[in-house]
Image 1 (cartoon, rainbow, N blue to C red):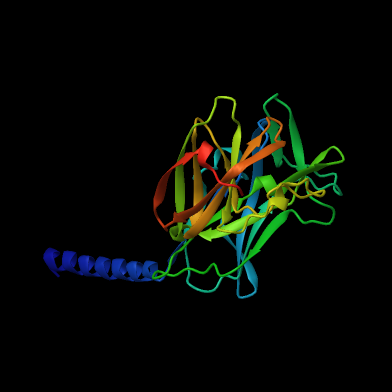
Image 2: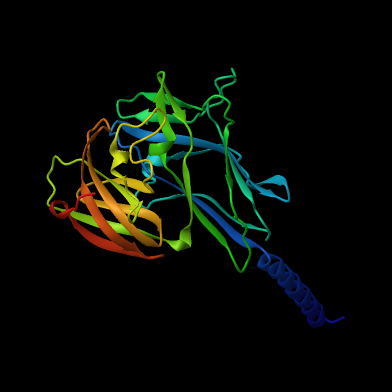
Length: 297
């Protein structure tokens, strides 16, 4: 056998091997999960740290890890609001139905003496912090149901909005974590990029987003234990330097409810509504909002 023929055989074998690998890769679907937040209204919160220890998908009745967590993954949700998100999972998976997803959390179990750090907690601007507790009987996990499957022709790309304003409440001197999550397909969402005029330097404004016509003024009343004001808002954001971004909104028409909030997070009044903001998927809508021209909510 000549050297030329030997090299030719190696090249043919390499090409066949590469083709096989490409064929196998072509059967896989990209699977992406990102996390974002609708923040708390109070200024005193510096960080909301949620510690994930595992992430699994349920396929054919069995749980399987989609990403191996050699170490716990901590996310400070305060830094991922206003159109920002944290990429938790970006992987290629075999095609097929995924009916459930499970996040495992490192959170305080009041019925166990075993404590593993780091734990989920709230960090305050004065340097103190509080551990986050689960409600009695709750497991240290979050399970979401839906159609989360992916294929080469139909990749999966989701954003999970952990609405911390609705997910955390205080009772009996403790902070409790009861996750409230909005799930959207990221490519089907758009953003609102807003600039405000006729505000004052003392205005502390929080904006709540509703589907057009869905807001009810009763939501501004004092909530029951474990609930929040504006409980049916899709998301919310604080106005900073006369600007704000509403991120990951599904295509459609929205009403923006403007409120004045104290530093402690207490509602001081509803300022009005900016109605009929049309969001288009994969676009950032620039809008100017005059605080003096808001309509009655």
